[in-house]
Length: 132
Image (tube, rainbow, N blue to C red; front, side, top):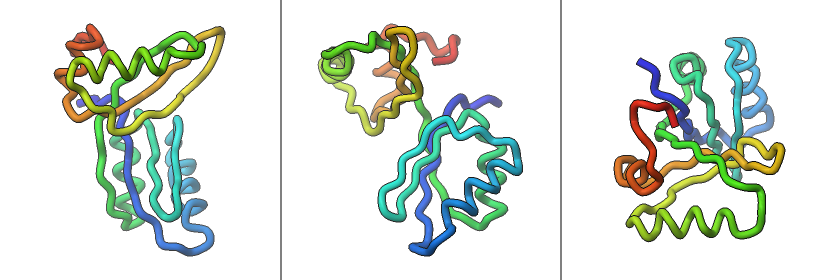
């Protein structure tokens, strides 16, 4: 079963080389990290190679949690994020995380998690049969 894109949330020890160890394991397994965020020892890695990422983190003995992500493309212009987030808010959906994947040819591709996937899909006119 393809889970689509997930964010993998991990906490690493506060020691030199910990992110290097994780990124090397991902590289050795051919896992592409699409984007990531690290603040102190908390790291979130986004990938669509979910089975492989689970195996890599388990092999390293690192506990993790995952969250499903949706994707959205929007114009790369001032106010686009405001309109997007307002639309979700008006639909009663809270954004719990958001990442920029790319900015190219006047468009920004985002991936994001929400508190209610079904409600977000309805609000954004997404269909579950079509990968987000």
